[in-house]
Image (cartoon, rainbow, N blue to C red; front, side, top):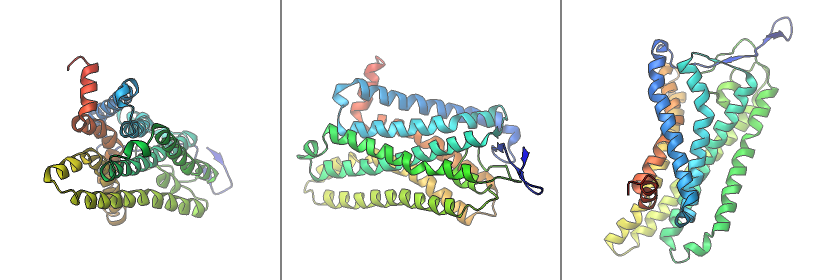
Length: 311
């Protein structure tokens, strides 16, 4: 640490936390956490490998799925190192620059996943509403451009976060609330004016909220279209194509909603539940999405079993 003036000391190390009150169980808690991370990383790598190597899967739906797997893989790789250090080795210290970089990638891949879920809902609507023109509208070149645009948008949207945090002064407080760095958590440690940073964070939150609203609206149109199909069997068949995506949406947005409610209405409760939900939010979507898509998507399942020699 070095002195800023006679009354303030600038913090040069932040400290992460595991689960308060359960520090003696951190090593045991780390076992399921590490297993879930490893399965999530392996599962998403398998999805990417199968889509990349199978020409029959070179179609818009699977390109969007590979983008979702990329977001999940990035989210896992961004948060896993500090969670491993915190729970296994009790190494809670992290330098500000590393912390800023981690929160940039975590929030960037979170926004990317939200954007991909939105474009996947449009993909499902288009496939059900106008299946004959689906291939002509969503060509491979257009899908590639969409994926590039959304990836660039997510990274550029989050770029001001680490730059703004780096410009703030941190003194007296150095203890974060999680085992990884989040923008709001780091910003609350600043002892200099963070008003601009606060409003930009609010803007980013509104952008992600708009994604969820647009996803909900797309499913209103999907249901309206499905209800117009005469055959009951065809209606079920159309809805069945959306099951995997609906599961992915719920897996991603339910923990965010629960976390937001706990932050606003459970401030005086034990922080352990909030921290646990926050950890689940980073671990569960990357873990469950490959499982859901492997179970519900016959083409993916068959190709994976074929690669493993189990078909």
